[in-house]
Length: 165
Image (cartoon, rainbow, N blue to C red; front, side, top):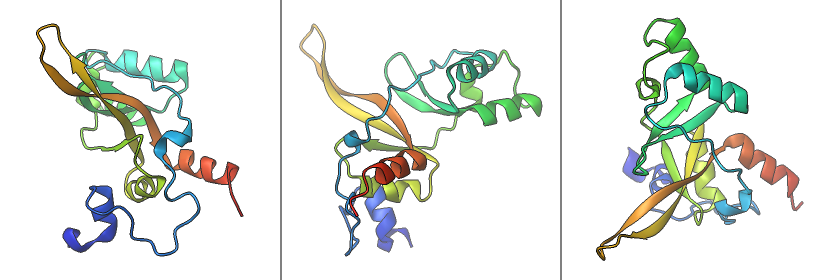
């Protein structure tokens, strides 16, 4: 079951590392991947606009984030196109109708080992950074900002370019 599965435990933050013979990159922090700033879509963007933006900018996927900063999920070009072509959504529908709301998040301070465990089951992870935000009335709260989207290809590229063998 999940509670005794080491990979599940790492992915969900209950274990730090379990590999006895870790590769050289296992403990390096996610921030070393040098990710480019993500393209972010607001929830009111239409499916038509999302398709055009993703194609024009050369992206396959983008996080959907509310103005408040709440991460609503991820939209992919292929899912949006197939949903429109299948008649499940209209071009004019908001992109939230084709947004995947199940996704993994990882922090900049987390290890590439943890990222590797996440990417064994997921196609991507949303890299988040937490910051304290203060308002004028003295209240404060932690806000998560999307720092990037990372895929297995990003990890593989980093490892192959920096291979220490």
